Image (cartoon, rainbow, N blue to C red; front, side, top):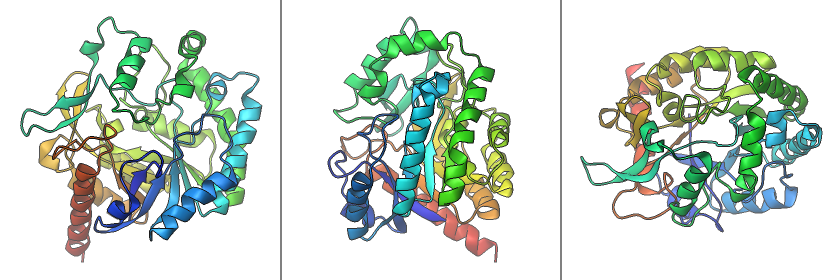
Length: 358
């Protein structure tokens, strides 16, 4: 296992590389250039600048996240071929600087949704990301976008970049005629266009699940269960077509058996990396992000890490969305303290599992 941490860059993250380096067992980053709009080429100069800073801090960066797929690709518009070509250029540029895994998603419009970015947890007074479908009420997509942007403490959030949301109403209208099967066909077209480049460069594409793990606002969503992911890996049969197994995203739906999914795809060699976090179920389509400690939520982190150890022990892992604790103010879900605690807890489980297996 390689323990990593998401970092947005020195111009966009209030967490420093020196702080990340001090977390025990931290090998590197899952990096991101959050200012890049979907469809834009990530240039060699931009990538080199980011990587040089990371390497100077004594960390590595073999995983890059949020190379966002343009909506024209998802909708199957005639302009998609140019955006696919741009994506292939980005893959080649990232590979030149040692990137081995690229995390992306194929969610229409919204990468993830929460109804509250800082809901207080009564048990300890911290706050965390929270979702309650009943709170959506008469709120439409545009209202939810405004609410999210106004409450993100001045930071950008993955999937909520202003450039992606500028044409929200037009995009939503176009999706009304797109079925899940249509979206899946467009997904195959995308994979067929990029996987040969990935194979040439030694890069693995890792698809992130829908979050939360069910359809929202009538949009087609095709990546929120083990059976969905079985279909995705079959769209283009290649080791380069793999998954980012996010325990919290899939785990938002209690029908998903996370350890079983890890074992299933781990044995297939189709897990590119994992995001590990915990969730607390509060009712139907209602949950909050919890501390990584299993007993604070409803996911069994021991069984999750045991499945990783048994089927994909060399994968990349990062502690995902943490609570805001100890008075910290920062990007919702991406504070330093609770994610550092999460990394330490995961490392403790990993050490114990390794010793128990001897």
